[in-house]
Image 1 (tube, rainbow, N blue to C red):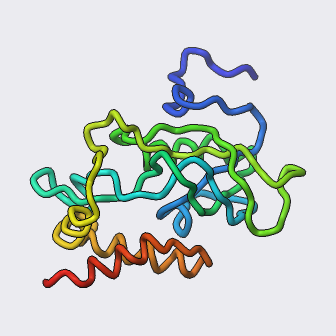
Image 2 (image 1 turned 90 degrees about the horizontal axis):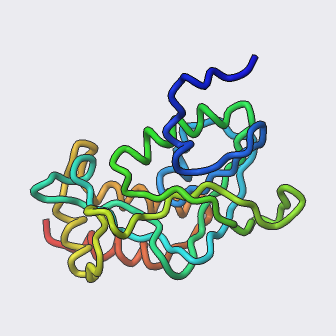
Length: 201
């Protein structure tokens, strides 16, 4: 049966093109690494070149308030980022993308992009050492993008802010803990956590 062209298109179809009937790779660099929330058939340690994990997104709800915004992670330009890439079976792709757009794209602070990521765990996928994966890159033109924050300001905000999902420091601690469990070393994030913990309560 042909699809009903009168039905509204899913939100993600306006942002990325996905080949019908094909599997999908999704790159996680923050909570998606340990809490993807979608079914997958395999996962690999992977590196995304050209972008790095950064506390560059203001959080007005989950880890802060409009008056005292906290900070959450985004993929910003420059360097590289170690994370986890998941393969979603073709049958699960539409539902997975619906879920990801509801989770990640509510305020559209991210730009979904299909980018090449390199596998790091010695296994091959799709016959090679790299795959094209859906990545959520921070939109530098978005009002919630925090341009040019120095480390002292980042430390202060993470130490002091709290939102609906709890203190901002808990978000950082959870990220550092799970990165270690996954065998991913992010020295910059670990150093940041040490500084935040050193702020007097």
